[in-house]
Length: 159
Figure 1 (tube, rainbow, N blue to C red):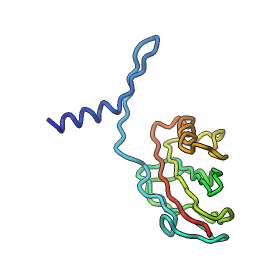
Figure 2 (cartoon, rainbow, N blue to C red):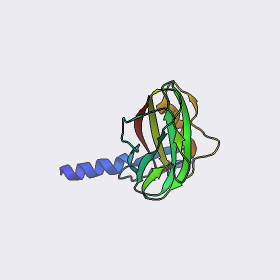
Figure 3 (cartoon, helix red, strand yellow):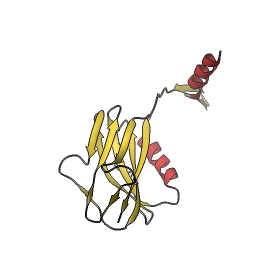
């Protein structure tokens, strides 16, 4: 009986009911987990890098999609490093000969990988100083129109 109740609650939690003047709309989405399985700097989460060094990121996806790398630096500035389409599997970012060379400010740098099933619109960027980084991220995901998305965060220090 407990399994039946658990299964029923999982099914109903994936339903969305919307009432329109023309009638009722029911949408259903089943999601068994996040698309991002692993995300960390090449030296591991919490690693220390020095000014002028390069940082790379290990990212593992369970399905292909678009990924935006977004940084929140110690001064509170948010900016996008990159956006790219990646296949399923493990990737070392940035791909190719491009590098992320570390500059000021020193301190804690938080980095988020934002996965969406489709390309994010070019007009929507995560750049600026935000009092609520999570709220801005929600707006970004809504503007992308993604039905499936995932966000993973890691961090490193610059000395």
